[in-house]
Length: 248
Image (cartoon, rainbow, N blue to C red; front, side, top):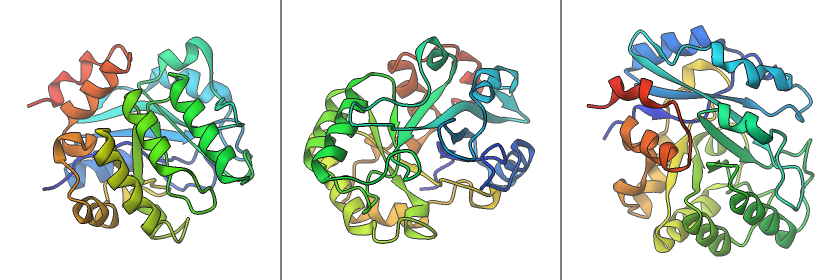
């Protein structure tokens, strides 16, 4: 099965990334990708775009040459309370909200602190997807996090770049996460975590994890634009009807 939906991509607005929105659209079109999300780092990251960058994403067209573009963020989890660096009514203006741990904002602590922070973030209702929860720098109680995510309809990400260019040592954790989410009845999503457009929609290593645990395809949000859009609608995101042209 080919997966034509990607929920995690960074543009040059996050200055350690190297591609523009136009670059991503060209690659998406060439690869046949139907829907992807622009998710630059939240403003507490040292080289992240300003808060206004996310407020002004309303200027982005939702469909360009048959490719859907979701307006999103990869927010930073700031503390043990699970707070993130984007807030209030502004969250409702975005189509998709990702959040994860990043060392410059939340230095690694203990397993209990990480677990508490993730569960509080999940329970806040502000975040749709937890990014790279298998990061070995942030050990967590995987079963507790998977159960909380399933209960609150939050997806956990299997991050393809964690097996390639960053967060080395994630594989065993990601397999355990996939198994725990499977057992808890929750949702997974694969993200390329692209920092350059060429890797958009590339999930080779993440697919290996999904296949290893025989994760049910009906609970993998990348399986179709409709699956992801239905999830986001259920999460309370509005104005997604413009993407209906992507649903077969």
